[in-house]
Image (cartoon, rainbow, N blue to C red; front, side):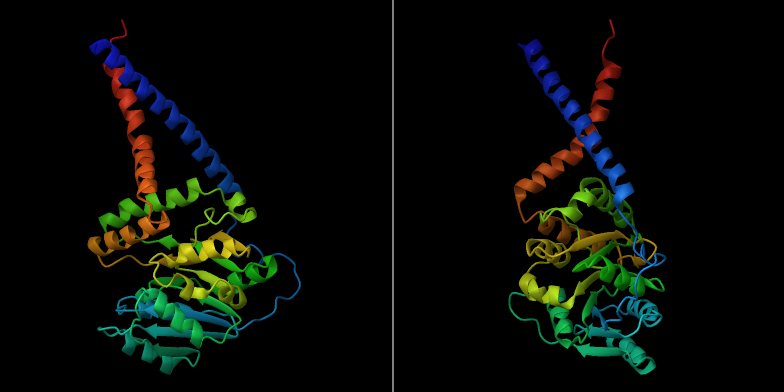
Length: 324
């Protein structure tokens, strides 16, 4: 009967309501705990400690058609106070002025080296192949991968190396500040940051070896060279467009120490060139992060929709229901 159908629908909506309330409470708890336990990069700078060894650090930057960003990126890198340091920048067969701009920095600073990228082999993504080539050229005991659109604050490398050595991490990554330049970024970046901060319990992620409890940011990945080689480097994720997430997962699978710090004051990611570029980049990231499983995408979409619309639906129903 219509009354029974209506009661059934209301029952389902009420169940969704309590599901959303329970999930929201869990997310709030994770957020509160993360606010307490998520350390900022550079936490050991002011603490008394024995002298930290000065390992050679290789900063590795893949670049393809980055003429609008590469100059800002390299200006920040050559301003770093850490020594000894080498900066390897791979021009991935750019069709713009990327290579010429890198050459200007090579002439300006002997620590900067231009690496000419070779043709992409079958089965590789472009960025993974570029990073793999850079890793083969690097001489450092510590490998720092950053993107060409990432700007590091002064002292970032020193802070990261010191923290990494003192806490004995194998992979140290940070949450950067993302600069939004278009409507797509303004809409998506808060969602991405919310997903990372509210769904990932940082303290548990640091203590447990579960590879799913990790979030690694390609804008800043500081590896011990030995750890990078142990997990197979970028060659082990050659066809995966989400290399950063997968490298973090592989680090934990190999029982190595993965650490995530808050780093909005230390690194910032420049905006994409427009709405379409931003949408493509975000789209390429979401599905690999879910292990290419449609079922996980459907469940996640349902949960996000429920969190957003069930409270509004219950409010609307309550407002239109006759109190008598």
